[in-house]
Length: 265
Ligand SMILES: O=C(O)CCC(=O)C(=O)O
Ligand SMILES: [Fe+2]
Image (cartoon, rainbow, N blue to C red; front, top):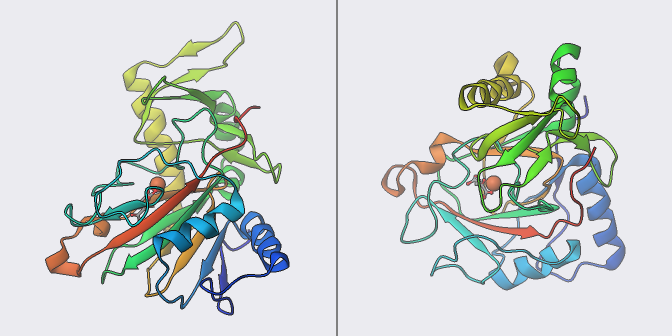
C-alpha cells in the first residue's frame, strides 16, 4: 500500500511557480492523492483562487459567508461569525457528490490554525483493495442516490477518470438510498433500514483495524493541501467543532474545481 500524501517543503506558493513545476505538482496530486505544502506564508483568497485555476475552473456551490476573502473561497470555521460551521461532519465523503460531475480537486488552506481539529483522509482505492472479495462484489452492485438537488445517482465503485484505478463516489451523510444492480432486471432501491445498514458497513470498512487506512492531518501554520478529490474520502474530525475558547479560532479556506467526468462503470 502506497503511503497517502506527498509532503513538499521547497515550494513557495506565493512566488510565481514555473509551468514545469505546476505540471509536476499535478502529476504528484494524482500519484499521491494529497500534496501537502508546508511552511507557506499567508495565502490570500485571490492567490488560492489563482493556484486553484491550475487545475481547471472553480465551481462554488457553497454558502458564501460574509467573511470569505473571495466569492470562490468556502470559509469554514468553528465560529459562525467567521465562517460556516459543522462542515464535513455528517460523514465520510468526497466533495460535490451531489453533482452530476463531482469536483475533480479540493484545495485546503488553514488560514487560522487551532490547537486541535484534524481533517481525516482515506485513500479510496486502498479501501476497495482492503475489502473481502464478497464485500467488494456486493459494493460493485451498488449505486448511491444523493439526498441533495435532483438526487443524482452515482456508481459506488467506478474507475477514476484519470488514473483508471477503482475509486468510490460516496457521501455517508447525504445518501438517501442505494440502488442495487442499476439498469438490470434485478434493479432495486433500498429502504431506509437497508440504506442505514449499508452506510454503517461502509463506515466500518473505513475505520476498521484501528483506522489503519486513515491519515489524519494535524494542521500546522502554513499548511496548504491539494487533494485529488475523486481518489480520497475525507471527514472533519469532531475536534473541528470545538469552540474557539477551547482550541482557538479555526478558519479553513477551501476551493473546489469543476469535475469533468460523470462517474460511470
Ligand atoms: O473542516 C475540515 O477539516 C474539512 C471540512 C470539509 O469536509 C470540507 O471543507 O470539504
Ligand atoms: Fe468536504
